[in-house]
Image (cartoon, rainbow, N blue to C red; front, side, top):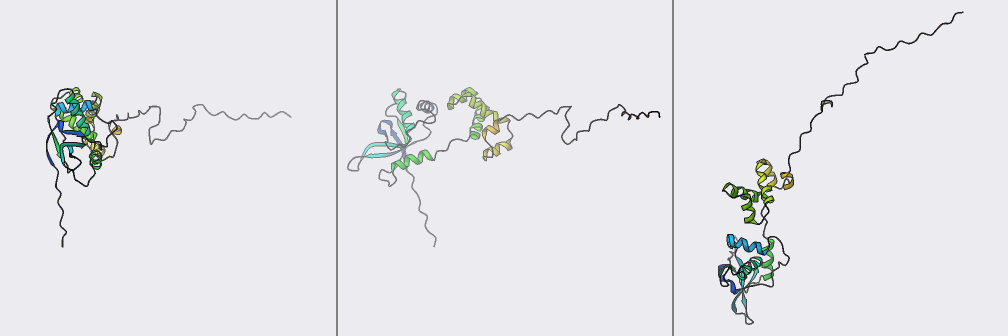
Length: 225
């Protein structure tokens, strides 16, 4: 008899006013890394909030919901929104897209924060190159691409330089068969063969015989009796 597969239920999502959100003390991220909060705030201004916050209802001493929500996953996005509020570029009660977890869940809120950060995979440089190439083909300059994604123009130029690389090598790089440094390295120059040096596979000729005739041995002088 086949075992019934237990189906999961995803958390609901809805907009919550920003002033009803508080940063959870269980958020595992403490060390600054990656794009700064200021740069993230500018990205939200330009692109909007692409990824929702994960929140849980805050309970009072009796286990009742208080109407506030804590943010265990998405702390950097929360701080960026907070900065925009302080700069008066975002209203305090602006609706924020949130995924709402179960306040009575057996899963620790610390675990939710940790898994949200650990499961995030950085973009592969080859995917970044293809995205930069598509944007340049649609009219964006290298400077505009760099400004939009908070990278230097040098990084954009390095990625776009991969357009000259063989597609076969790009596939090897995608499969981790070579490093980015090897892929971007200029080809080694072909060594020039000196006209005075023997070519590979040729034997070195022996020294040519001297054109001077060999000296004859001196006949001994026979004295008279």
